Image 1 (cartoon, rainbow, N blue to C red):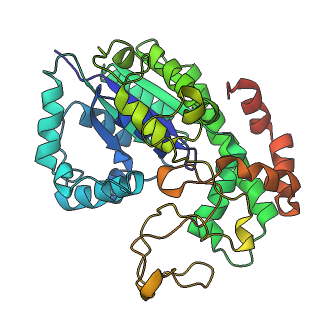
Image 2: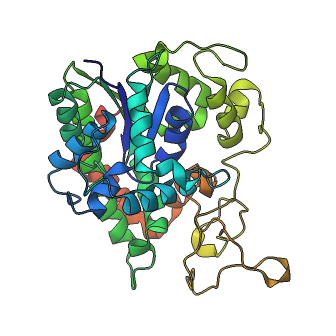
Length: 376
């Protein structure tokens, strides 16, 4: 009985997963169906609770890749459309898909069509909410005998932690916050989770392919990083590339997206359509210097009446409100908040308020083990 091959990228939040997932997976023609954070729908519907045992969530996700839409609590049209439309607008702010794309019947037809596709296509997913539960995802794939590749994306934990401090509202807007203490606690959590997930990847059974990939590799050489991944994953390695515009194993669809959205891409293959648009080109300024609205990249819509640091949302000429906000912090990696992603390093190294994070990174046992075991 034929099963849909699956490629799933898992990572921590603020790790560059939206950029890499969209470029590496969604744009590849071998990915016949791309699912962005189905686990959040599972949480919203109360079928599993974040940070607890994720056996149920992992099984629901893997069953979905094989066109099992039988759980009517999960596959609620209103909730599914609401979430996936929001995620798509976040990942593709310039060209969001119509809501009809996320009609459950349409997704089921798309999934089942993959079972008959020639050459074989697969289901590709991106998830950031299997934190410390990657082992259960791998176990589900093995138990259900689904041909699966897990791509464990890791960004320098300090960069992810810095991004969370400035992006997550519960951290950013916390009253009387002690950044040194918060940073220390956050980096300890990142190291603990990263070590757990990396250990699961290293111990993956032969039935499930598991690979660690590094965001910084995409940052320095997107073409090389993509080629390395595509060489290792059968779904991509065996895909028959035809026509012009391809770069080695990289389809033209991926190449064009890379030229538009990856700053390193220009240097690695000489440009192309949209090459003048660079992702990582904004200011290095600390967010606290009130430079958050200077970048012109699109951001997720403001909620009605929402304020940033007491400031009303910006206006354009004539006083008309902007439909989309602008960048409001400097450590992000994804398409809709284009910034110079490595700018966290200067602040981390020089800022007194990050002293606790620096000490924890050096002294914490999980952080030490992670530095020793990680390929990143």
